[in-house]
Image (cartoon, rainbow, N blue to C red; front, top):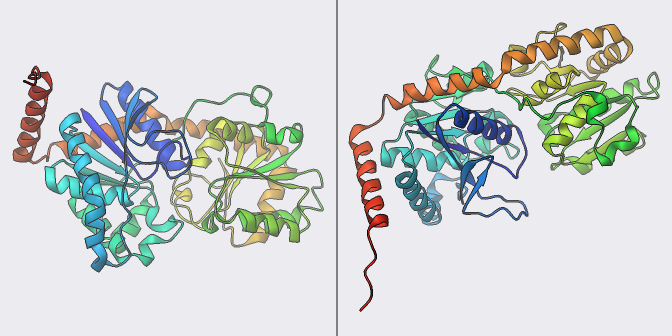
Length: 419
């Protein structure tokens, strides 16, 4: 099967959707499928080309997805900006001939994928990753265009998945997904890049913490992630745990606000902000941590919980959103409403003070991680794609194949010499 994956962001950007798509592409390829990633051109400074490249043996095509305006009446400028991109995507369809296109996290990528599916008859799969609830700019609240686009995408899609039932319920309530029509496919983490505490060490920027007990939290430093709530909770236990530090890994719009909050609380010498971390550095930080905390005000899923489980580190996770669907409170993690900073502080103190409890939860999490192995997830996606492909539009499929044959014939024919 030929599969085109269209993530909202991709490497060199780092995040849950980026990691999920990269691992999914690699594992589908291992299963014998032909896979391409059709990714947005990177917005950060990088040497990565914006045309075509290869990553992990997978062909990655880069497209510039013009961002839809907030007002549907301003769609005309978007069409002018977007037509070259749509044309390039149509050429990619003729070249690659995908059987299915899968949007991972619906953003501008989803707008173009929906249009592409309508034009070509290619079956569309929309995989919701909590973007309707966790977008940094709250785009689905402020943009009528994006709300309409997602409704259109869900209506066009042959299959819709969500990273949690919580995510699917939101799509049902606000974006026209028929009740019960979506399928939950949990996310997964990369099983590689992990070792013992001694083997992993710490990133260079945190080597001074070697041998020190610390609490770790990782992710985009934005309001929804609740890192400020964790600082408040950490402040409540500081005097009883003078040797414990806090590491807040990641970058984002609230990073400077967090630094200032740590200063106001008098925690500047015990709270550390290493910034953006690589995949390997994330594994290093989690393996060496005493406790991991995900204090999100709301979290559709939380891949970083899986990464902490894989690392063998005890987890405290938010009780709001998707985590209660896969974290068993008191068994493989502790679930806490982070808005209650006293409750969060008490959970932290419990795990820091009770070695037996902490080790038991860490071990249970490591065992639980086995339920999220990539062969299982890959099988679920392949079954999903097969169901979507069975509904493919036959006439448009023939047109795509005919266009591809004409292109192949043109490419193979000898060029005429100019007279």
